[in-house]
Image (cartoon, rainbow, N blue to C red):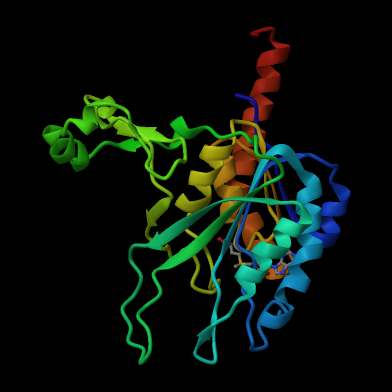
Length: 290
Ligand SMILES: C[S@@+](CC[C@H](N)C(=O)[O-])C[C@H]1O[C@@H](n2cnc3c(N)ncnc32)[C@H](O)[C@@H]1O
């Protein structure tokens, strides 16, 4: 099997991406540093400066993404002075002005979010995964993320009404219709835009690691084998590790040396394995076995 390439880079993604050509990546999936009113480990991007900080970087993302590609932004606004900050909403509006289409919003529901008590709100158990595109026609491989039909089939499909058996056109004039009986005897259905995934504690020193299943889901949905995936805020290396596992080429960038090293370690085992595979491949090739 042809080996995949994994490039782990150290530096500011704004600068590193200048080395990459236009229209190179098939998917960008990332979780940027959160805006924080405290001084933080990334040098402290303040909520009111967040959009200004983000836009030059997203301009690079727009340039390096293929027209058929997708950008998934995992982000959540913080609570500052008892109020939700508005920087995510402002960022969406500015990204649209920059030339992005805001195609969809997925919700990552954190299934195992820990208990807590706050005087004015409940525990926060979800984050946004915003989908942006360069064009309205982007690659999407929906069959790759189908889910088992589950109990819905047993209950709902057993009691079909008359309208369920014909195509029921939407009342709101959207042009969409549904025919529930179409799903009879099918084992799999398309998923919803809510992803129920447990958080993972791969590294307690790295506070904002996302679970492997999160980038994996988007990589499967928006790319094929050997496509190129970018995570410009790589952190502990989750995206590149997953990309390697499911045979996608990837580039990951992080500004902190410790994260760069951690990401390298997390992906190196697979890199070594692939080098061995490559050596075998070459041996086979020279032996005329192909
Ligand atoms: C929320 S964390 C990413 C966590 C990652 N998804 C994971 O699973 O480990 C954001 C990362 O962005 C990095 N970062 C902040 N500013 C950056 C920049 N300008 N260029 C590249 N990386 C940056 C931080 O060092 C941090 O590791």
